[in-house]
Amino acid sequence: MSLGDFQDRMAAMALGRAPVDPAAVAGWADPRWSAAALQRRLAVHRRNAAGAAIEALAAAFPVTRMMIGDAAFAIFARTYLRDHPPAVPQLSAWGADFPDQLAAEADLWPAVSWVARLEWARLAVWFAPETPVFHPGEASPTRLALRPSARVVDAPWPVQAIWAAHQPDAAMDLAEAVERGPDCVLVVRGPSGLPVHRLMPAGTGILAGLFRPNDRGEVPALAAVVALALERRPDLDLPAALGGLISAGALGPAA
Image (cartoon, rainbow, N blue to C red; front, side, top):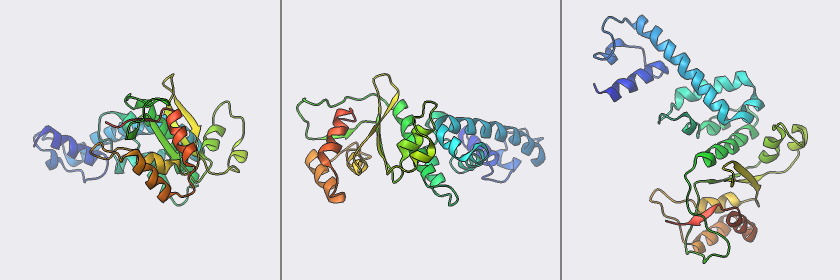
């Protein structure tokens, strides 16, 4: 058994995805350990992992945590850890699917998962690599790509207003925020390195998605992106949406 296999089996047992069986880690664990002894040791790792996971998700989704409360958040975090353990040794890169898990919870207010998507966009933008930006006035390339440091959350809820209502310097309360209409929010990394929010025309998420490179790093030509965006969203305010993406520095030359 390789070290990787041992780690995978230990993780599966610690997270409750596999039964505790000393034979499954034979050759690496102390041969004198009974199933009960191994269970006790795994319980320590489980508690430590759960604690670190809850803290990591709480740091990534502070407003989401405020919206549903500490106890419920801890339950969802433990479930997420069990079903989606970190794939890389970097907790700041873990949590992309957490909003989808919240969206599947029938008893949660649907706006919660959308606020979580906005918060994940903020984190992703923060840690994204720096790439070239297309500036207005430059010769337009035939292909533009959405930069890693830009995300669009096109929500059916007033996510920007709800998020802002939970900030220390909030200018409105939650009751006022939820009365607002849907928000399409562009999140970009500002000059200071901090995420900046910019409200965009509804449907900008469709346009931004078409600028996102595929698995081969390819994007359609600019003319094709425009045509597809209008086909999928005929009421899109294309000049405002495209102009907003460009002026905010969300697009760069395609590789």
